[in-house]
Length: 248
Image 1 (cartoon, rainbow, N blue to C red):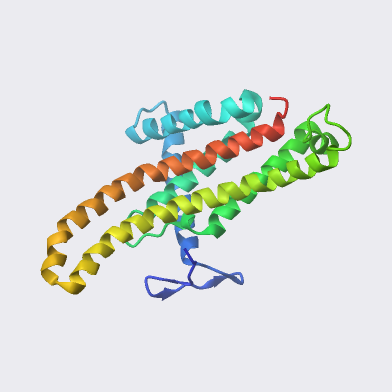
Image 2: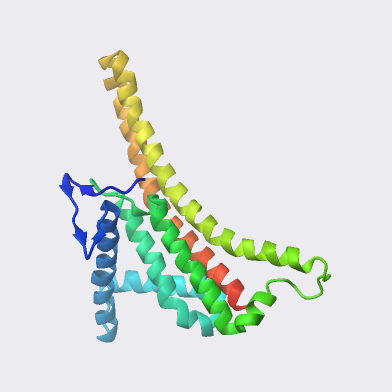
């Protein structure tokens, strides 16, 4: 998806000299949703409440913590980085879900958004690895011990390339999956107009099947929105964990 400077026919302004894009609006809305929903969750927990929203989202938080972060980072480092991975998970989830509502946009279908998230993961990988292991040991430990000296430079270059390839894979995986799902829905809807060009009767005849398949795909897209947020967060946790604890 190519970002545009217009949204609903309105030209988006510049703020402090920076252009606001249409995907930026939905990114900000996703952040707003996080503050609105989790502000209530925090208040409910502090007041020993048991609201329905608090139960649902506190359950998601516990699931991300126990199934994604702690198994890959350990409890000590996982507790420090848990807020980051929770933000990544819910930020991606809401951006994905906004693309399913009428007139909404999926910001994660833009490579600029997914690349920004992946670069943030890369920074945590490098900075976190050097903080835990030390600036020199981090780079030296990329190559396993016992490697012949003649092969060490080649393996070092391959491992450094691997550090870059990991966030690149995160970028392309999320962007391609979210774009592909929308293309499938548009393809189903396009069949109705395609057959309608030759005969309106045929177009109306296939429309119930086409609309039904489109609705079914939209339901699947809701599941994919959560799945892709989970996959991105899980892979990010795995990559960061590999840099923090190379011996594991």
